Image (tube, helix red, strand yellow):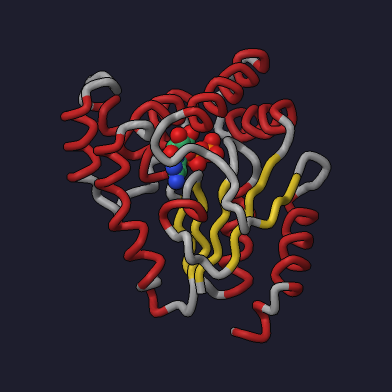
Length: 215
Ligand code: CDP
């Protein structure tokens, strides 16, 4: 059973994916962490994100078991992640791991929840259920601000809104795997929903699709 959750930066897709995976007893994969790990590797090697060979090598040598470095969540890492995510060589390197995770959920789990930008469109086009999560740029910027403040990394609110909008534009307009809803995705706008509200709405949608009868 494969559930995909795509959407723009700080739309709440990661939190929803984690909650749904816990609730259903499924494995969860945050694919943004893979692109962030490639970015962090380049930052640590002091390489430029336009260096395609270095980015490809970073993706090839990625240790998928160590995706928990807190620096992965830094705003700078997110920005560089969206730059390297536009490189076809990097995406190609990361595709097999994501598809294998979907096909063979770790821990013998009976399903997966995978979140990202292109999961319903490119990585798992035959997924059982697809979500596309949105929220206004202002709300998403305020969520990101809160996340960074909570981690002791306060930033200028104006800068964050611009960073969110720049990243949206880059992710939506790139040639390879642009951010867009799959045709058969369920759209969920979380602008006026908190985490519990988004979770409840997602459960209603899952119920309507008959997912619980299939489990
Ligand atoms: O946490 P946030 O929603 O801000 O971003 P993320 O999901 O961690 O993704 C970071 C960046 O990786 C995005 O801006 C995308 O450019 C890229 N990404 C992608 O291209 N494809 C994915 N499946 C996941 C992330």
